[in-house]
Length: 143
Image (cartoon, rainbow, N blue to C red):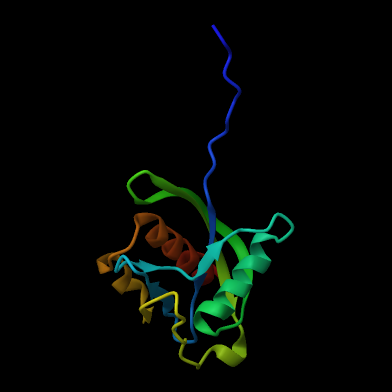
């Protein structure tokens, strides 16, 4: 019997951020699958850390400036059958100068929305994002 070389599973890593505006609404973006998602993107460069990638993605996707805070969750998501993505979510703090400014919508998304905590469960989005949002609301409420 010939030994086959070990080939590790490879998954893209997507770094996402939970950001609240000045009215305690979470920013969500609608993707091409008509699902709401958190802003962020794939970690692509080996020498770029997750926080730097996320801060760049937030600026590019919605025009806001945010500082990445604590890790909230990690989970595996299958957006389409047979394609898995490793999701890493962080709580983010919006820059004060952007607190009253509406987000812009980049070419990557169809729509941007700001939602209060009680609106989240009714939205079409993966459970993992909902859990991360809930964690960030709990974290910020503890102050």
